[in-house]
Figure 1: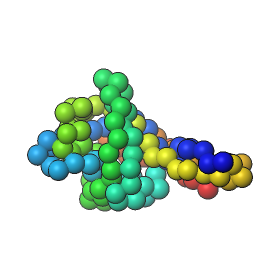
Figure 2: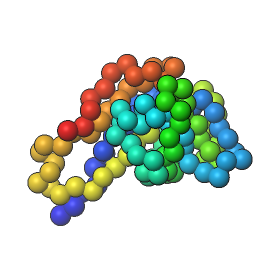
Figure 3: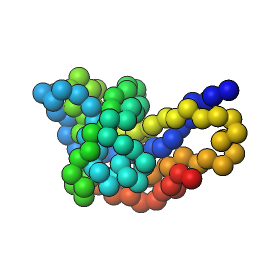
Figure 4: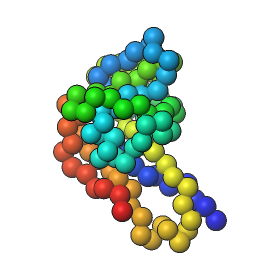
Length: 121
């Protein structure tokens, strides 16, 4: 049996921009992507802490070190710069994998700097 499990999470990231004119996705700083084990084009769920919106999109890599989290296209209507978001990725796993796997959980400060985290195993 397969179970869908949380693979990684960027917790309390701050939206730096919302670009309605871009064709879609969420731009995330490449360093934050690496810390959370996210790849370009990977599907993610975004949870807006400020307004309760929950939606799915895909990741594109932003400039490393810029600490950017930008919602693009239609998703830009669901956030405002300054909103706090949780960005979650999921993976399908065999039950035998569950005992050894741990998700990457990365906590961010108000400047999208990593303040603590647990990398996946």
